[in-house]
Image (cartoon, rainbow, N blue to C red):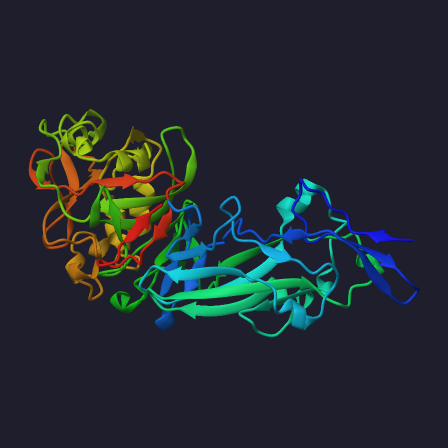
Length: 475
């Protein structure tokens, strides 16, 4: 009695052929039914990548390039040969029956190129995994070929069984910044297939995954180090990574610290014109809390009064709030930038008589909020850039605190700059002074203004290393 491999033209299956049993110990091909076996690149898992020299880079948001046969993930780009439906070129299993390794090695390969478009070395792994989505769609979980009868070869290397690939990993490697590698994969049904394998097929996909460091992970496409907040020699710490801060009220955020971290980003058409403060889980104007990237303009847009009426109520401000949100600054933003900014609930807490940095943060984040698109830096944002829990003795004189000086913070710019936070006194607002201290001044005096925005939660990092000459690119 004949055993048939099923073939459904509406589904992608590994192969189709009909075998006829000649005797109890052998079978012979009686009919050839050609069918292509397609491995499609349907997903790229993009996570934090270990870099040489203890640095890190991130591959995150998956975006399709203008050319349909190029897929990009962070600084990692993969390009394919001519594709079917833009998903990857086809491997044909033209052998009508299980074949020997020598025949399998002569097959046409599935070819793709990996390019590191960033400037930092990146490690990766290539996997062949079951396409669970296609399997679920076809409802064929009981009709799949065993991995023990599927063979593969990567870059014309040894013929290996898929069952021996740990977690489906078939190759690992490292790409230097700007380098490319071309890889090919061949697959076939091994000649150890038995009668019970007849009528079966296989759905698979190739996944290129960044190798994650054991000491770091990623948030919104940016690497961060799992670290305590007390960090010595901040300026010598890893400049690629944010640091995790857990606050007394349960909030968790991720911040860049030190004097010059790699947190430059292209925004509003300005190459390195903005910097990333970090990633914060704050609520938008609808009350939805999600992790969002927070940006600050690298340079001041000029000196402005906080409020011309000498009021420190941001909600009633007729000056700076208006300029930033509906006035000249807002009108200077391009269409892409306007579409990336989230309307947020900004905290209006007053921070008089704080005892330490955590106390400062807690008082800033009281229930009173203001809904808007553009604000300013919080005093606590500045304090936390020093990398440790600055106490009350340092609050008004950062220069004398534990041997630190203002140059230890990348937010310091040698000029007076307003913060978002008011004092309990009716006309006083906190600012970072030109000597690096945090003090109050009248709302109707002029100080530098560096606008701050939160990006929508779906805006992630799509490229770049964060250096001034290779800023992050927003996807």
